[in-house]
Each structure stands twice: as structure tokens, then as C-alpha cells.
Figure (cartoon, rainbow, N blue to C red):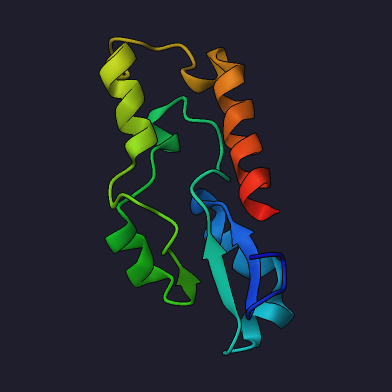
Length: 115
């Protein structure tokens, strides 16, 4: 599961896949190399632009990325904030950034998984 074990190169934030693939041209050019997406590694969930597209849609655009660690096709984290604080028009201030412990917990869970 580490950075280069099992043919996996890195853990790509779901909202940064194109940047990651462009940032590692040598690794991206290796057709046997698979990039692994991990839901916990992403920007904070504050505004509409932070909501990710469905995995079905993203995986069609990025066939070299393994999404097997993603449990929901839809953005479950975004949905949880919609349920708790309302739509962007109802709640215009930052969502997850107002709960830094939630951001820290996502980071911690990723590093625990990475071990």
C-alpha cells in the first residue's frame, strides 16, 4: 500500500488526479504503473467547487487510477455537510475548515491506513 509497492505509485487526492499525473510524467508514462486514489486525501470540503464528481464519471476520465478504496460513487463527505449545515445558499461560510478536527481526522486516518 506504500508509495511504490505492488505496482502502485502514489495516493492521489480525488480532486487532483490530472495534476498528479502531469506531475509524475515518468511514472505516468509507465503503462504498468497504477495510481491509487484515496478518499481521505483531498482538499477541505467547504464550497461547491470542493464537491467531487461521481467515481463512475472520474474513472472513465482516468482509467489508470484505481478507485477501489472509494466506498461511494457519490461524494459522501459533501453529502454529510449538506445534511448537517444545508445547501451553499443556506450556509455560505466554510464548512470543513470550521471543523479543523475533521480535517485532522481525515489526515490521521490516511496515515494509519498507509502504515
